[in-house]
Figure (cartoon, rainbow, N blue to C red):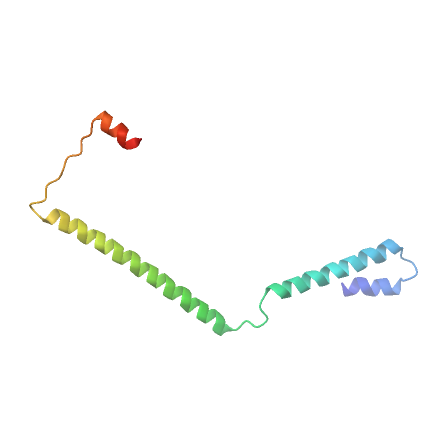
Length: 105
């Protein structure tokens, strides 16, 4: 961009007004894009911030994994206790067509 500005200054009498307008538009666009970029990103990024974020995410992941494993363990223990009991009777589920239709509706 500086190269274009230097050439514009050197040839200031030879260029048409449209060239000046396009160069000013390009400069304005570049500066506004740079300003927008700086406004959306934080000014001070420290490694400590990334470390803190990583620790929080790791703790959250570990907690979710622990909860899922506990739920699975409780399901397995329920299944084992259900079928370990010899007095447990399995109920056969045979429904007539009318019962199926009433349940579906």
